[in-house]
Image (cartoon, rainbow, N blue to C red; front, top):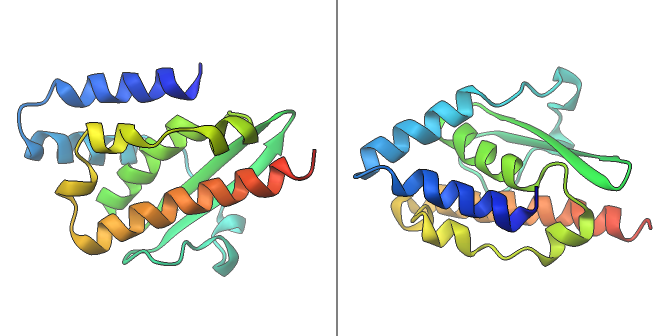
Length: 139
């Protein structure tokens, strides 16, 4: 599935909820379903800087795609990274680098997060793009 299609799917899912309490609950549920990152990847190198809570992100090149795994010590943050992993894992480095991030504004995520969590979200996206950039230059 293409990144744009996944993003549209997420926007549709979020539009089903009437208020932000329901959306927060949904984000938390997504975090609970996030596949566990291997303990060996919970290192200082994989820790995302700029997040209030601890977030580990690990990317691995498999064939022509990047597979991401992640974890967080905060339930809401874990849900946010789950949304990003769903969107960008198993995609090519080029597609990740070319991807538009407007779906985050469409679901209203940034405006409904505290400033520190919003900064964390930006840092998560930046790290995903950095992995894509690193793997893209290996081709």
